[in-house]
Length: 153
Image (cartoon, one colour):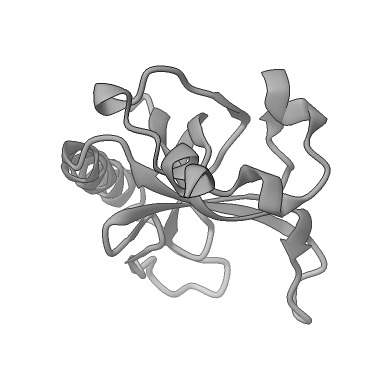
């Protein structure tokens, strides 16, 4: 299954310059939360997640672990967070265009962007969405830019 995903939306939260780092994990996690341009994207993502899980189950249903126990799916999805899309990566996304000139996370808030990445199942069984490229997107729905309206007031 091709898991390449492109999502256009408004950034509501982001951690690129100060990534999340837990005491247990040594690897930082670069995260962003997007309010998608169109709500149907959430349904499309749910369909892709379901298909990815089904493919994964078929690949591992007759598998055994090193200790002799049978493989069991432990399903959790971090992709959809209420009406927003949660993106997390172990590698910082490649910032394209004007976004490459930003120096702190607050500069990204409210921006209309396009994130390109992959849906994948982590070895723990959690479904995640990564971001490899983050770039400005143009012409949102009806040219609505909430950030510009907010700035004008």
